[in-house]
Length: 87
Image (cartoon, rainbow, N blue to C red; front, side):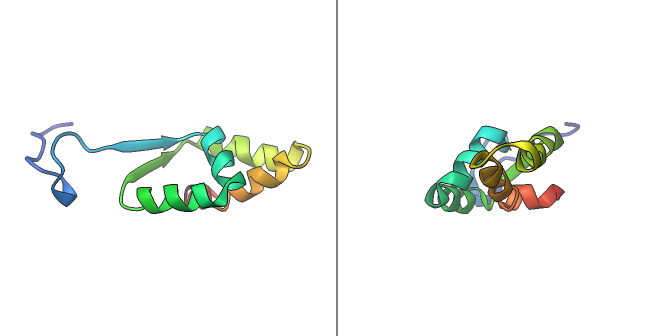
């Protein structure tokens, strides 16, 4: 970071901006429990979210190679907003 932090962030928050890293397990959990996935997606829609390419690759490989129901869950996880970003 090359400059001073802003006194306040969007929405009136103060301090450092938050950055969320979603992992394979959390994405598969959200795929299995659609109500949880909807709630988390709604909560994080105005937040900065990062999906590491390695997580996307792991989900893609699980979709292709894992036995059911894991392959199905991985496929659903790839349709969540962060999974589509790299697809």
